[in-house]
Image (cartoon, rainbow, N blue to C red; front, top):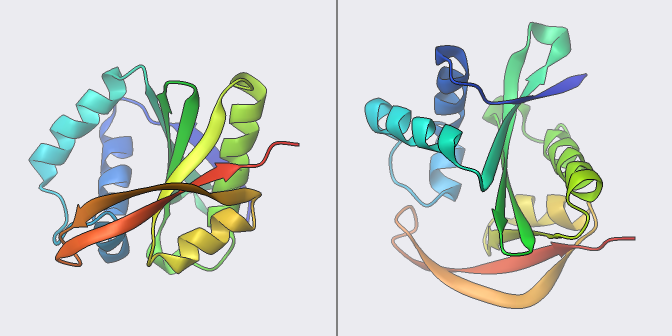
Length: 166
């Protein structure tokens, strides 16, 4: 499978692709929500994302299959860190697309933002995500925080994972 990473643009196709991804049961669940986003509110959120200077969003597409969207990647810049967040379409889970996304993200960061730490916050029960980050040179740090997850109806512990350069 050949992947292409496209920065999101201000168009209906990219909005629709990201909305579809963010409306999947697994993405809703692991994002801590109980229902898919409202389409109009999501469109407002999307427009706001396009204006942000501290976030970049890519859609991950399969070039061999008419550019079908397989996943997404967010890079959020805060202080001297870049935080990675990603998602993979449910029917493509387990095909190493998550690893390819993380690898792409770390390469972008190392090339264009070498002075930044590369990190991710992962909720404790998301074992698949933890394993994907661990196999891509991230290590669990001592930093933790609690966040309310409506999908679990309680606060959950999130652990910080940091990319090990070199």
